[in-house]
Image (cartoon, rainbow, N blue to C red):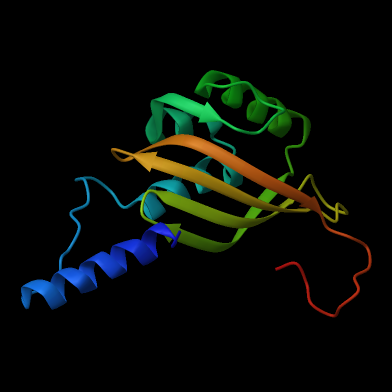
Length: 154
């Protein structure tokens, strides 16, 4: 089964060939681009540590959490992150890459708890609906001291 964006391309191309007219363009719901919603949210919550404000502004009323350490819902995540930043006020999360595909946005992030911490490579994936973040997944890998290749994780 082709990837959703590949299917959209195939369908648009088929529509062009069959109809012999302008390409089929999928309409996007009104509102801000999912990529900008997620990046603005992330910077406010994770770089500025303004967690509650970020959730109030950018997260929808229903928030599905897939991180097994955090219960569903915005309030549980607000509490979890606020406590993390209270204990680690020097914690940083630096966005290295942003990948967007429709309503999904992935951030490749270097996360540290403070000076001297090697950090973790994180891929946070968010789903956006009607201009609000409604779902979150993450994959977290500690930054190793040594590697089998000369490349960095970023």
